[in-house]
Length: 157
Image (cartoon, rainbow, N blue to C red; front, side, top):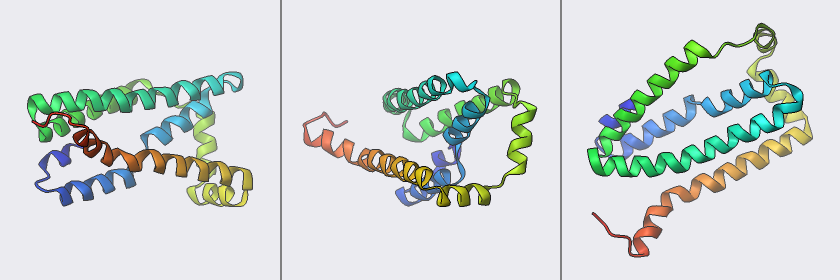
């Protein structure tokens, strides 16, 4: 995220965002951790809270990010967000402890086995495809929103 603050053109930012999307996975890791460590009777509630906070973070983060970019400039927002990510990583490293039984289970499986299982299980495959298409439909409209707001007559700086 911090490196994006040094981007000098849209193509550099585009490549860095692609790279971020390819190597990040905090939400998926959080979902897996919550699913594995929450008692079975409470997992639906815990996953619901996690998904709600992710959605709220996207809304509130965009609002604060837009206001902050007006105050300190767009490039500096990437530096602030990078710093917040570093603080978050420190908190996670210090306070999140994976129970031993979860570690043992995750070591006995592999990414290839997981993909193979998802591809052969029709119910899981359908759910995953639904999630993928839902995420695509949400994310694809995001770049259009500023143009729509401009078309509505929103003041331009």
